[in-house]
Length: 480
Ligand code: SF4
Image (tube, rainbow, N blue to C red; front, side, top):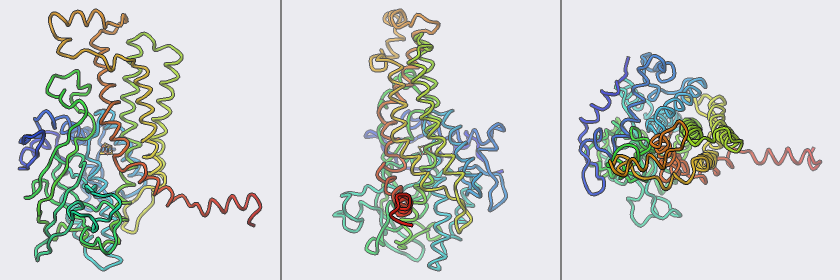
């Protein structure tokens, strides 16, 4: 079996020698630094659950390369059943973390590259797929966590990579050497970047001939020389230094812990290069990766909605209003929205198909619809949770005051809801709702896996408007 324990995962991160900046200082130990610790814990949950016999059937798979038992996060989908299992696994993990566990980005990058390297070789006679298989075996056998690096800083959005004033605004080739290539540029908002073992780089958009130097895909160890990480801020992140309750979800945090990753003339050996100048395949690689990742959002966000719905329901009980008809109505609406997201993720998986490489791919129209729904339904679930929880969400005293020998008893007296719940329980639930429904998590559901407009482009491309017009014309008698 090729599976790491959660502790081995944490230990393996300590061995990586990386340059990570946060708020003007270096982070030397991502496992124990308050800013990154929750995100490490969330990713560690993927390792923990894979070794739990209860979750093993969903969280592990049999490698089609080695026949070994591996983490599902390093598996190449061999059937629609695998795609469905992925969705079920993501919801299950999200129910335990209430946060992003980050490992799906690399998972989707592996699956996208598996298919695209095969198709590139078929068309151009290149040898990328064989190389990629070697790399995949390495990742599977070591049970590595990979971050998928796709989004370039992009500069002026109306200009192609090669038209930017600063050529580094899209990651690009600097030099080809006998042993490999040298690259420069950056990747923005990289989920799980500071607690992954490997960085898998892909292009960010479809490209033309002039952008050949930007059509790159490759993998490097997370501590490769020349890589620099700038860890991003999140709403309420300073609370990580202040105690536990005010963070809402102190163990796992909110969202994925994103970083700007800068590539300062990084060397990549040829055996880890999977696309180098084949610009025709940049767009298909982006689409493949994006649809796999948009599939996920109906699962991990439904899992997070389960927590929000549970917290809203529990706070309604604490307030003594759980039986009120308008509360029941709102909770029912939240369940409806969340299960609609999940249905989309299951549907795009069940309707998946085999690609020429043998790997299975989701139904892109349904996967993109799922993610587009997330950008609306998740907001509505959060709005309803805030409605149920009440204005206290924005006015609660701090944990320090709750613990203060003089002030604490006053808070406990005046914020006691008068039911079986204590003031502290009410505050804890309120803080969980506050941290899951405000700020960074909302922006993440809007733009993670691509902004709504990116989905609409694919919806219109996939919708078959011509065929729909034909159907309408036929019914109203314009066409036979
Ligand atoms: Fe996985 Fe969801 Fe986080 Fe994306 S947002 S990495 S799908 S948990």
